[in-house]
Length: 185
Image 1 (cartoon, helix red, strand yellow):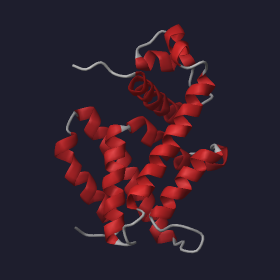
Image 2 (cartoon, rainbow, N blue to C red):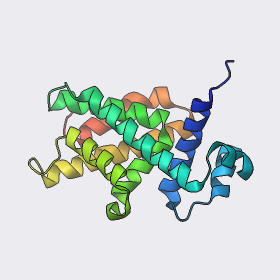
Image 3 (tube, rainbow, N blue to C red):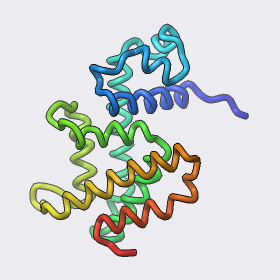
C-alpha cells in the first residue's frame, strides 16, 4: 500500500475537523476533539497545524475550493435538467469523498448564515447560483427544492458511508435528489 502524502493526510484532517465544526460550531469544537477524531495527540496535531484557527481556515479554504471546482465542472452545461443532474452527481461524489467538508458547507445554510465567514457564504452563493438561484432568478419553490435535494444528498450520503454501501445507494441518492428538484426520473 503506497504511503500517503502530507497533503493527503492534511486533507483528511481538515475534512474530519470540518465535520466537527459543522456539528458543534467552531467555538464549541476543541483542539483536543479534533486530535481525538483524527487519531493524533494534541501536540502531533499542532505539529501539522499551528492552531485551531489554522485548521478552521484550512476547512473554509477547502470548502471554498471544492465548491468552486464543482461549479466550474458544470459551468458549460445548460441550465435545466442536464445541469441539475450534473450538479447532483458532482455533489453526491463530493459528499461521499469529503463528507466533513460537505457537512461544513451545509451547516452554513442550516444554522446562521450571518455568522459564517465571507468565504463560506461566497461558496454557498456560488453553489446556489449554479442551481439557478440568484437575485434575478429567485423563487421560493426552487429554493425549497434545492435545499431539500442538497440536504437529502448530505443525509443519504452520510448514511451510505456509515453503512459502507456507497455503491449500492449511489443511484438511489441521485434519483431522490432529482425528484426533490422536480425531475421525475
